[in-house]
Amino acid sequence: MEDVSLIRGEKWILQQINWTIHKGDNWVLFGLNGAGKTALLNVLNAYYFPTKGKVSVLGKEFGKDPIGGELRKQIGFVSSSLQQKFHPGDNSFEVVLSGAYASIGLYETPTDNIREKAITLLKELGCIQYANRNYETLSQGEKQRVLIARSLMNNPSLLILDEPTNGLDFIAREQFLETIEEISTKEEAPTMIYVTHHVEEILPIFNKTLLLKEGQVFSAGETNEMISSSNLSHFLNMDVEVIWKNGRPLVSKRRAIKI
Ligand SMILES: Nc1ncnc2c1ncn2[C@@H]1O[C@H](COP(=O)(O)OP(=O)(O)OP(=O)(O)O)[C@@H](O)[C@H]1O
Ligand SMILES: [Mg+2]
Image 1: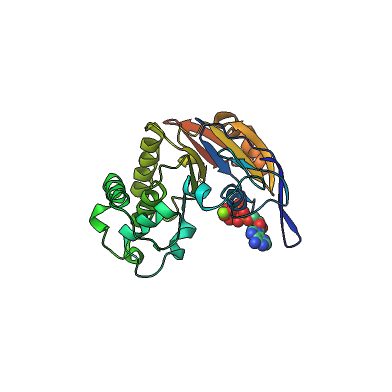
Image 2: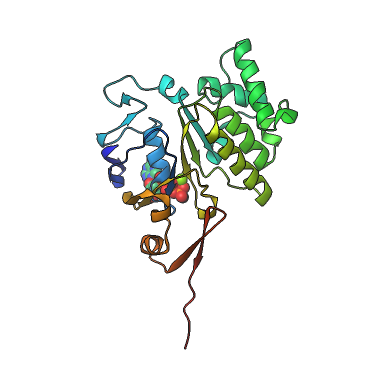
């Protein structure tokens, strides 16, 4: 992204974003509610066209090259906001199959190859036992697993995870993070972008971090430099302390000491 800005109504939601993601890096996108994270992801996904600036994703420049379904098929997207969008009555298998077409709902007849791929992914993610269950009836954690399976149907080059652990219990969250780590070690692993409000979810594989504040890049670079006590305290306007444990950061608010 070069100098990307986005206006919605009268408000500049994103302003002069410069961001380059290289293959092999995995990024965390961190920022407070309303900072513009989801809007930024929607620009990457080609759902929003930037008001100003230049965007190229996976070698395709928006506005010059044809953008649409084909590009979206190369981008896996997991977001709990997707959960409400599936059609009532779709079973988990159908939700996963729809990933092959980057569509919400299944409008085409999947080939045998596509069906086999969906079954393999349902097995890999431990959700084959609820393949025939109505998606709506699954627990939050079960739904997230199905969504990850769906996002991997096309072996995406870019995998976007927007607050994927919403609603997961501790064990389900840790299992989910393990899955993410496993995906990253595979040959042909996708480049990942991970949005979270919980810094303790930042796995060592996420070597880069972009801090977004009020639609602007506050800072971007190596995760251990971005998620440091001093940088986060500036970013949050709050005195916080970051400690690293088991390769992951933990953040807490410093207490004022009364004398
Ligand atoms: N279509 C729209 N029209 C008007 N305002 C919008 C639109 N889409 C987003 N916004 C506003 O843009 C800002 C950024 O929204 P966005 O959803 O990107 O935030 P976010 O960083 O993802 O926040 P959260 O952590 O709460 O998910 C918010 O103030 C939001 O209300
Ligand atoms: Mg959001």
